[in-house]
Length: 253
Image (cartoon, rainbow, N blue to C red):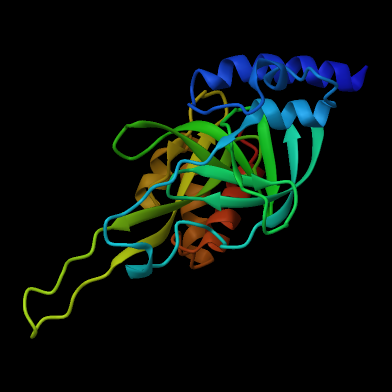
């Protein structure tokens, strides 16, 4: 019964997620809907994986510094759909495209697939859990991508996002000037969700900006906490401690 229930959910998810993300399902309609004697795990793979988009750059891969990936290796990870455990897979996170690449094994001949985006999917990747969700950046642009919860409580949930920017290189103008290679640059963004507010916003890591999003009765104790503990909001550990303190405040009285 549990497997049948999961299978029904997966088929429904395929119908909704496929309209958002392009991709071909190998094996035709029978494969897509878990027919031909497939197990529920096979059905999951059929409905939630697609061929990778190959992004080619004219400068050539050998000339690009850095990587679009969090790690180049595929890391054994646990995959969940809602509260249901799907299984262990080998995962690599492409932060540039905000895509999860997935394999069933580490065999050299197995081609990686792209995990189709779905808000019910959770991937326990390394020390963190990747969640596909909608968020709003500093430019008030609505984006979709993977975030990780790094602190949560009654008042706020704090999210981490690994981002990658690609910078095009420049050829040397003459023999006296060195060429600038193309590169992938990694950086981190933080987002928050306030209790009772159904949106995730990017956090500006400045004391004044942080105090601005707090309730009036929280501002003074948080300001004092930052001063007394010499908090650097650009430091992730300090940022987590600050949100843990915020969530510990009792503002009901």
